[in-house]
Length: 385
Image (cartoon, rainbow, N blue to C red; front, side, top):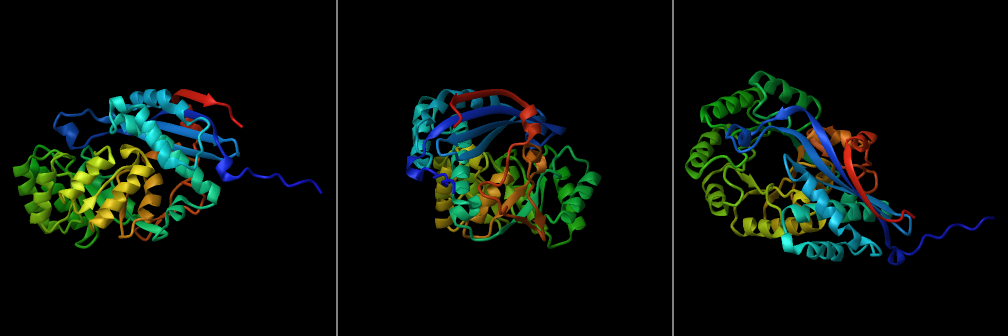
């Protein structure tokens, strides 16, 4: 009988090969939120994706990703290229130590923002590998509290969408088993926002979960007025009514109004989230794992939020956040965005208002051939085993 191959012990495994790829995902329709209508940004036409693929001497592999909207994608890729060689020969189990090593490799440009977003792709890939090696979905590796998570749709509620189509989109989302609807607000003419929210609330009924998102475009007096007006619509939350760094202003709104305040998606480090939480500036904390630098710092944010008794609603990237939300003690929300689906061969399922946690090991996704065709640059170090 032939001998059974012996897998090297985990502690003897070393990172042998890493590839980073810069992929640009085109959007079917230019996307506009309040930042476009106030003239601060252009409509979004594509999303830059930074992929990291890691393989080890023991034959294990993992994939991770980060992203950037409108600008910054080439910068993330450039920084990833500069630091990727620091991973070669390292033990892939030492994820926290490797995060610190990569962070300090580029510390002169800061320990938040673009530099740590580049690290995020590597960090996610290492966690994906660790879960695959254990034969577990990432949520189970982290310690899941549930097998499905409440989900809400955002992609159908942008400001470029006419009201009639908005109502169609909400119906389609409900038919897909999605459990909530989020509308973009923050237009220069507040009356238009009120009209749209009123129409959608009437269309959905009094109790169906409805959220709004001003994308940081109100000043304090406007936010005060709009939060007061929106109290009548029984909203799950009002998102980013103020600039993301205005912790005092958000805290005042959270203390004054019954409708919960949500913010945090634009913060780019665990330290920035710690300040938000210290100020009690949100009822719902909205960390984005790729933006804060991956799963390792995300877990720090989640620990702080849980200790403070806050609710959690991770931003974007549902393919990753469904796992992280499933591991949060309090019942969270996950944002349903189908935009990234063409990047992967697998699809997430929704039913009865919830997103099902994949049962496949790791993240449960693999990079599609379409994503390979959209890739503009690649860089490799090491040798594939």
